[in-house]
Length: 553
Image (cartoon, rainbow, N blue to C red; front, side, top):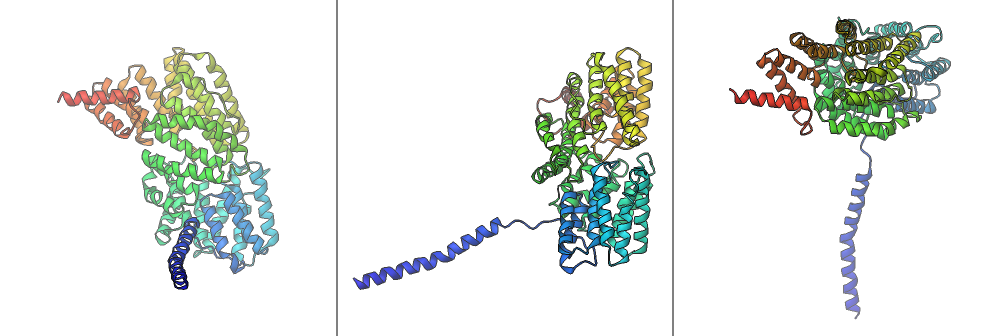
């Protein structure tokens, strides 16, 4: 009996010895599985005189700043100050984070107050090096006399100050990068030489070769070349940025700026699917809506309207979170989120030619004048083209008031954009009333004004390009050759755009140019390779034309 028990005990011990490593291994596997992946924000090295123990957190906060993750960057710089209260340069980071997206237009209210407070904090703490004091002095220019000095004057002063920092410390890579960004911030949207963009882009591209994992270099190259004429130069940076800093929602979105400019619609959708999901997790609602607007624009060009319908349905619920404290903590300020919430349903109606749907749109909360203007513009166009002009007067009157509101705020860019919308609404009003020549004159005026400027970074493209609408009028008037010219001019600025591509093909067809029609129709069918079925009437017409042409050969 004792022998049997001893044998049994030995057997049990053997089993336990075999199980323990497996259990330990399973626990280790679980631990490895639960351990979060390393945060990837790219590589930044910003030397400071602060406590050496703060170096990693300071560089992390600066990397977040370079990817316009402003709330997270602020939190990082605050951690540095908590660890080393003598680190004045960390307050510089807080001040620049408070400024937010430099491409988002005028700053007002709380951002200015927070930034100015951070500047005072930095100046009070001081810095142990002249270099750090120069950085602090430069950022102070953004907030200096903000109540009496206009936005353009202050950003120009900041640009000059950062240029001096870059010249004084030529081996300071961060100074060169922030100086280039400061210059891009002041680039005039009416300067078609793109002098500042080209100069800054050249500096950034040279540095990118030496520092291929720096998030700011990839990011700002995309911004430098975010115009139709220069966009192909940014393709390498666009393809790499999301790989450099995948932990930043804006790094996932920003490549789509370039993809949109060159008509890479599938790539734009993929970029913004990832960005919107990341922004939702972060609670940066404005960034989420911004990504959804870019998604919407790309889906519509590929005639994937069902996907957009789902986005339109969820936007009102998402927009309710714009009042949350974190909503504007990313690259997109709350005003950009409001713009997107207005733009998405407007695009959905106008791009599909749903004129009654456009006329029925209701303005969302007045987050910003330019956001409300989108809805009134779409309503006016929809009412005119649906043959229900009775509401157009009210919408044009509201566009006029919103333009004047922006003018009073000295926001010249958006005042100009709303004026273009007012002119185009007036053109369609004249068209509906039978005043064709007046309509042509107004539409040409609006198209020329739009061509003379550039779109804002807040938007993937015009809600409805003015020259495309002029082309629509010309085509309806039987002037097919003139219409084709106008549509093809749109395609030069907005390549692979559905309505312009189809309009150019239809114009060529009506002018008797079967080969020209085939070129544009083939392009349209290629763009819409994965369109909804049976799809839009325009796409079905293009396919039928190509099938008939092929059969007759």
